[in-house]
Image (cartoon, each protein chain N blue to C red):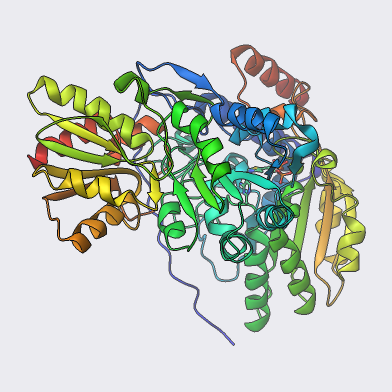
Length: 342
Length: 273
Ligand SMILES: Cc1ncc(C[n+]2csc(CCOP(=O)(O)OP(=O)(O)O)c2C)c(N)n1
Ligand SMILES: [Mg+2]
């Protein structure tokens, strides 16, 4: 038997000289002008575990990189280091949940969504078990390249029945989502921002509180409505501040719960005649943008609709600020895109 | 190359790797220092590969499954002539081909995209099966981390390799006893590994993975047992060659500061004498 090997062609590349040193590949997200809180997930989970004995934590050799080490230090008897084994991570969490515990299982978003999908879908979601899956490096938050960039995790998980999906923006969202996730009687997937996490939302709306299943207006504006989640809400707010100087009024509706989407709030705001822009740290396929678009169409609400998100491609590696500029997620790029659509 | 030349080459690769990680501000230096002697033996003694013809159908296939140590592979490929040596300075820069994990579609000499651990050996099983199916003589070699062996996919591949009698497949496990967050022993200990592989029907050897003579001997054709895949447990030290990194889990992917860089380079230079 013979077979011709698949053809391949190599291209040398010209790499521009950059002054920018490559920032650490899994570092905290830089957010100019905002205060930051250390490890908000780890601290919130430790605090919750002080009063709720059902809380247990599991990780797959990534406790420090998901801030779960804070919980592990405070509650060592309720922490399981599963090693590099994402499938047993999820299925063992299911087993613990069967017996009345509320497991928080952590790894990187790529490994939960790609490797462990079957185990999450069948062992956890079908039985509607209260396993909370909390994953670092969502979307484009590492420069490591496609193997670590979870650019399609929301698309993967949105198709899974029973699963609630959360994409928090900042330290307040991350800390406050923890008790709400635990209180929800079913499985939840949350994207995690870890390390030093900026505090963004209260700067713009001092009485902001995270509410599971709710989208909330963070800023009003007459010309454009941005519906956003995750770190793109920070970008939208920063862009709105800049655009206001040019007389462009941008409203920002933060929708950290991706599923179930807050249909009523989105429809009410979308019906006010503004250009509607969705902004997400995710491929434009299958994430917040398409979820909003489908919601609008189904209800017969049809504003002019534009999407900010990552392209349908395996992305480049490199320093994160450069990549955010390149793929349209930086504040500068958000401003340029909105101006181009007006 | 004589074993002496190979040791000198490994030292050179260590120094270039250290410099690349320092300049890029990222990398996985611990696992790079532990695997470099094995990579050197493979590329400069064992593998039948031609940098001028990286897609030669008769070449041996090498898969670096512990893809996070890509920088060590890039430096080795550059020393061998697959990519220009100057290109190493683009490691991790936007638009570079030299990403944090090796990509087969971008870099000549790379046989499989890795990075998510537990991919390399399963793919290598398919490659070795293809060689058998085509009656081809080329060999397939894989290097995994020891923490990586906690991934279930590896054990599925180990069973398949025996079932298909893949005696043209060699797995080298870089057994440095450390993973990302802690010692394997404190995480999910898989030691002793050799009896486990033996129980699955593999021909197994245990060696000092920094002793060039032992590496070469273990990889020689004489150690192949017909009908059995070959497993080599290479006992290594994470961060090997740099005193303050050696056996220290903190150096999984820490980046040396200027002072540490100077000291590390001085130690490697002294070892080169
Ligand atoms: C499936 C998967 N889970 C987790 C990781 C994150 N990760 C990267 S390196 C590493 C530890 C690797 O340990 P080991 O295999 O022993 O390699 P070495 O000690 O040689 O660096 C982990 C957990 C990954 N790359 N892939
Ligand atoms: Mg190891």
